[in-house]
Image (cartoon, rainbow, N blue to C red; front, side):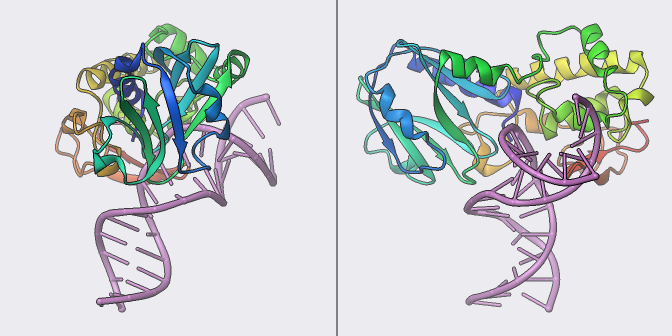
Length: 262
DNA sequence: CGAGGTACCTGACAGC
DNA sequence: TGCTGTCAGGTACCTC
C-alpha cells in the first residue's frame, strides 16, 4: 500500500519527467481522471514533489496536477507500443519527447486532478505535519492534545500527521513497544517520543529500500524491499518469535505482539 | 468540535 | 466448475 516511503519513491522516479511538455492527454476513466485535464495540454512540467501521500506536478502556467495513488494507483513511464500498461488504464499523458506516462489503477480509488495554486493550497492545508520534518518532542506535544484517541487510529489521521498508513503505523507501534489499542492519554511522554523516533527510523529505512511491496498490484516496478524487514504487518510471528494477535481497529486489520507491546 | 463508523472499488482467496 | 462471501485499505463523508 502506498504510504510515505512508497510515494516518495514514485516521486523520485517521476522527477525524470521535469522539463517535458505534455502534448496530449487521453482519458479512459472519468471517475479517476479530472475532466479539466485538457487544460494542461502544452504545459511544461517544472517540478514533481510529494506532500503527505499526494504527488504534485508543478506546471509552468501556474497549474498543478495533484495525483493520489490511494491503494492501487500506479504511474508508468514508457513508449508507444509497450502493451504492459494497457491493463487498468485510466489516462495517458503524451510528452514532447514521444514518450508517455500513464496512470493505472485497479480499484479505481486513486485520482489525478488539475488545480490552480489556490485550490492546491486549500487542499494541502488540511494536512498535518510531515513526520520527518518535526521533532519527537513536537510529536509528543501534538499527541497530548488528543488523549482520548486510540493511538493507532490517530497515526492514520492525515490531519494529525501525514504519510503514515496501516503498515507503518503497526510497525512503529511494535518497535516502540506500544499496544495499538492504547489511548494516547495512557502512553507516557517518553514512549510517545520513542514512537516518533522509531517512526522516523523506519520511514527512512523504507525510503532507502524503495518502500514496501506487499501486493502485486501496488508494487513500484518490483523495486521495494522493505517487506523483508516487516516486524508485524503481514507476519505470523514478531522478531522475538512470539505469536502475533490480529484484531480490527477502526475497520483496519491490526497485528501486534501482546508480549512486546504494552 | 472530535471521535468513530462506513462507502467507495476490484481482485484474491476460502468454502461449499 | 462456479458461485458466494470476506478481506484488503486511504480518504471523504456521515453520524453521534
